[in-house]
Length: 278
Ligand code: GLN
Image (cartoon, rainbow, N blue to C red; front, side, top):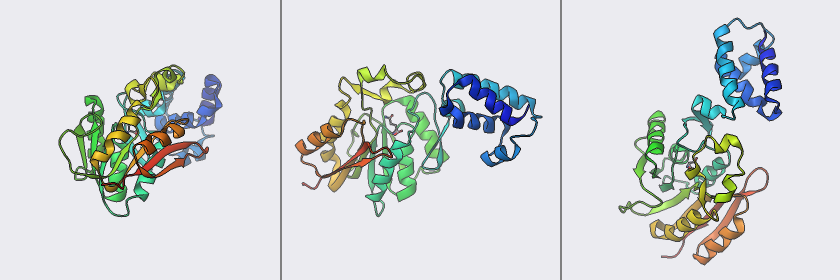
């Protein structure tokens, strides 16, 4: 059997061409190959039989809708690898837009509060990219374990401070230049319509906010001014229909410089608003 036969067999069994990239990743991990090595060897006969067994074990998990991130307990974010497990939300590519928008607001290192840090991708990436200090707030003890593991992995203990807490720190940490969050923003009934690869493997509390989906977003926006330095900004990832609601909530709370960043399909995914009042 050749590597390309393995690939084709797997795609036939899965019957969903959009999983082609995942199958390639499974092959690479099973035989310890880089993408380039795979392309060079794909028409050679496979000699590593234990690799073949490994591949079919992984494939069965993919068939049961487990993502490669969950199978390998790793996901890339902003070109860096992060440890993940079922207790945290696997980082999504949209969240990179949030981090990019935040970096552009920090020409020099600042002080950041990351609400609901989860695996820590936002906190750690911002600390590495901008040299800022980040309070990474997380309420779930199991997610905090993952967050701390990633802080050690990226050797950034001097800048990222994992803190147990819900929404805002209890003790006064001073004022922040940025309050950032990728909060749960789905409505309760949206959960049921999510695909099985999300519903079975991502934590519900990382995604669902309440009856409307806006509950946590609204609370963050209302309370953030009490934690922002003058001119400080709030950055939030939002659901694809939430821009009009966000505009209203932000205006009602007297924010200025309200803007939205669209994702690659033109959908507003990030809200940025600053606080100039004293
Ligand atoms: N901050 C983490 C992320 O963006 C977790 C967010 C969450 O659990 N809602 O991936």
